Image (tube, rainbow, N blue to C red):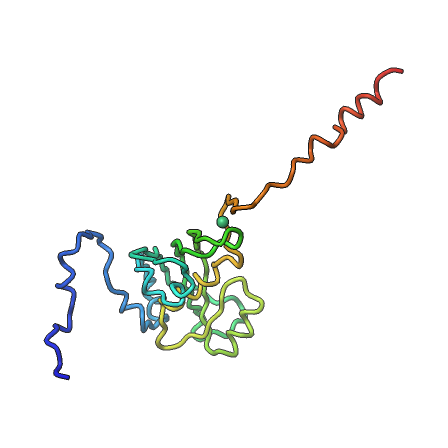
Length: 203
Ligand SMILES: [Zn+2]
């Protein structure tokens, strides 16, 4: 087939969009990050990312996610290694990920979609090797990962969002057809304080 004449850059094609958000449309600069450089820069980045870009999350959705967004805030920093740590240069590379969105999941009580909030607030620490990461992750509150030269930050954010998914999604308050509340039993029980009061009464 002859190649089309579609321009390689489609930014202009979307300029007619009604959206006036200042958030960049692209997260391409998150796909191959040298996190050590980010940390040395003390990089802070915050933006809304289309939920549709998180394909593993979208696979879990039971309804169209439309143009839903994921709000993501990243903060990279160097911290001094604690005494005895084997980090090169005595510096540790950390990344804080905060993210939130809503994902339509299946309510396990009524089996209809429930818009489920996913909330991430997680520290990641990067170490020299996979082995070291696996060893230290066991005993660390933060997530410990191997510091690769090129990290896909969007994938890291998605990993955290997936871990934030509830195992059993439920509506806060749902009563499926045929559901009947447990009968109130409280009134049938004798009031213990009334019983106590009766005992205390003079005979
Ligand atoms: Zn429900």
